[in-house]
Amino acid sequence: MSTVLEINHLTVSFDTPDGAVQAVNDVSLLVEEGECVGLVGESGSGKSQTFMAAMGLLADNATVSGAIHFEGSNLLTANEKELNKLRGERIAMIFQDPMTSLTPHMKIGRQLAEVLIEHRGVGKAEARKQARAMLERVHFPEAERRLDMYPHELSGGLRQRVMIAMALMCEPAMLIADEPTTALDVTVQAQILDLLMEIKDSLGTAIVLITHDLGVVAGLADRVAVMYGGRIVEKGAVADMFESPAHPYTQGLLACTPRLDEDITALVTIPGQPPNAQSLPGGCSFHPRCTYVTERCKAERPILETTAKYRAKACHLDALEAAE
Amino acid sequence: MWAYFTRRVLIAIPTLWVVITVAFFLMRLAPGGPFDQEAPLPPEIMANLKAAYGLDQPLWWQYLNYLGGLLQGDFGPSFKYKDFTVTELIGQGFPVSIQNGVAALTLTILIGIPLGAMAALRQNSSADHAAMTVAMTGIVIPNFVVGPLLALVFGIWLKETVFALPVGGWNNGAFENRILPVICLALPFIAYVARITRASLIETLRTNYVRTARAKGLPFRMVVLRHAFKTAMIPVVTYLGPATVFLLTGSMVIETIFSLPGIGRYFVQGALNRDYTLVMGVTILAASLVIFLNLFVDLAYAWLDPKVRYE
Ligand SMILES: Nc1ncnc2c1ncn2[C@@H]1O[C@H](COP(=O)(O)OP(=O)(O)O)[C@@H](O)[C@H]1O
Ligand code: SF4
Ligand SMILES: [Mg+2]
Image (cartoon, rainbow over the protein chains, first blue to last red):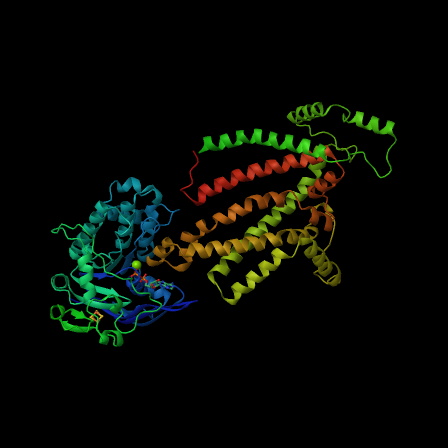
């Protein structure tokens, strides 16, 4: 397997009138060819901004450092023109809210076709034909007729299929799906996730699946990284992580995830508030909410240590079992 | 949709009728009459004049008479400009106002929108701040200050140079005569449109679908023109509808400063003179323009935003 995307020591901070917001802190992550990496964490933990940095879509008040290597280029130093050669062609992204992510005054056929026209220079008629074929590939019913529809004439689930088809028009090496199902009905959620897996298998597209729901990742991802307060606190192969979570936060997330084989009566949540990116707690950012907290945790930030192949955690505890 | 617009045109008729009725009676409430002068006329002459124009009749009769005339396209005689009908006066004045209005509207669109868009794309740069300061100045300085100032510069200071421009008169619509009044008329509108365009485009550039368009790798120019521009124009169109009525019906201030025989002056003069029929004529013209432009604005909405559908 070769590496598609390599994030090295990425830091993103935002300048605001109330001071700097540390959104992403020293994040490193690998995505290998054709695999699915899940990125999990509560809202505000820096998941989206990590990949906005990769797409060159950070807001104007952002400052970045580190490197993001993709197919031989450093995406953080690439200029707008170089980025535009890759975005939509080699690396694509879909977003949480399909209701507002399509241009309201353009027919969907045209929005799909323009990707090919721009990147491949194909003619309008050919682009339309391929747009239709791609819609059919993502199981979009009555594609031909609906090419001439406006986004508002489609349901949320169908719009997300349009977004996915649009992202795949040039068969990119990597697709970033930022909470692709959060805004959708539960039944539609499952269909969209199935579709993403089908794409991974049939097109060999590497997928980064960003979600706050560990349950979503369980069935789909090969590897998982858990983010807290802008840092990766644990990562590993999906089965390992679910079987033996090494970080108290991951354990908490797992406890909050309803499992089909359990009869859940009370929904568990991790006590306490997610951290404020503007004033992160000192030491381990998780310490105000951690049941295993010690004096050392408050004073010294644990570094992300590799414990086995693909496996790493940032916690002063040697093993969870030891503390129990 | 066409059924909708046909209905709108039909509804315009009762709307106009209400406007006419309200204007007719409101004007009669104002004290004084068309033949009052500083030295009062002898009562017999006054009585004769009133009889000649039908003003001795009961008010409801005058009203029905006026409506009857309107139905035949007759706006009546002017009470003040003797020997002229209102139709003749409007026929002389309106072309002047409309020509200047269309020119000012064109300048407003061709300068205001690109200026605002450039400011939005260079948000918070010095070019942006400069453009917006100029725009703010254009809005707050009233045109009865700008007009004489332009006249001073181009009529007096630059008198001996090639930049000298006539500062008054219509001169059959000669180009040089129209430059200063059109600029003076257009300036505050250019400024407003630039500000609205800037604010609206900045907001549109923050939308999720603009982010999607960028994520697709489209060049930024195309992102702006194809994905952001139409939505950004909605507030501009909303503003331009009523602004166009103002521009086309002539500005009293500008027509006075530059001595133009337009319709804006007739309206104010007419109101001061209690020239009932003339004021009614201009009111009906303005109301019709308002109705027509509202329709046009609604059509524009449907084009800019496909979610807008009229049933
Ligand atoms: N333009 C911005 N200015 C200031 N703060 C921002 C900006 N964009 C994002 N943030 C902050 O960065 C943090 C991480 O955001 P994000 O990556 O979107 O979180 P999530 O994990 O929910 O995707 C949040 O605290 C958010 O408020
Ligand atoms: S470092 Fe300490 S506070 Fe942080 S997760 Fe581990 S035990 Fe809890
Ligand atoms: Mg997010």
